[in-house]
Image (tube, rainbow, N blue to C red; front, side, top):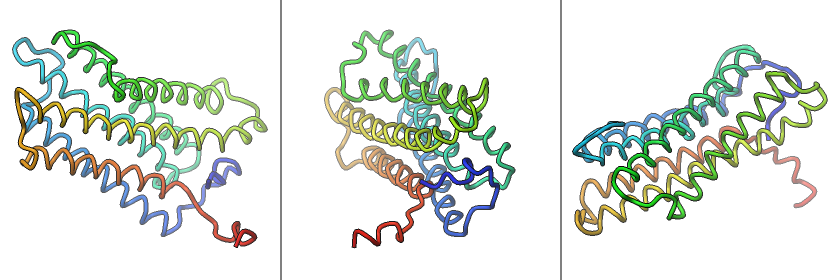
Length: 241
């Protein structure tokens, strides 16, 4: 894990390889956002937190915010140490703010789906997607709170921060990976419902293909963020060869 900038306090610019990797991740984030909006607005009818006659509009807020929050904004928060040409302290603040925005969007997305279930008479927390999702957003909140307390206010001692940085980075990537995995479960679950009665969405129709392709782009986004963040030094493994 390349966390030397945080540990040593350096503010060196990212390498060209890191620039290329982060650019791919940024492009995939934009593509994923556009695709999920296309699905929820064009195919599913739009977004609304309050609706008397079409509760599906309330649900539509959920996939948009869960993608935009923990995955897109969370991914950008992870990447900002490499992608923002700012001093280290400024990047730390951007990292904190982007994660806070991602957490807020995720919390609102969870509220939207609970609201949809309650108003539609659907039970809550009955699926693997919902179980993993609640665990993921809870861990995201704990990760953000721990980072705030350790690195911002009141702040741990320098020695404690140095020891905590690798764990903070690894746990952050694990939570991000959980968010991407939860999204895959969510796309699969929703598409399965749409293809069953009463809607019986065509399995090879435009909407089904769009949902599958969106899920694939989100998965690639997750891989791109991890690859852009992790630095593998091949010389470390010479003794194993």
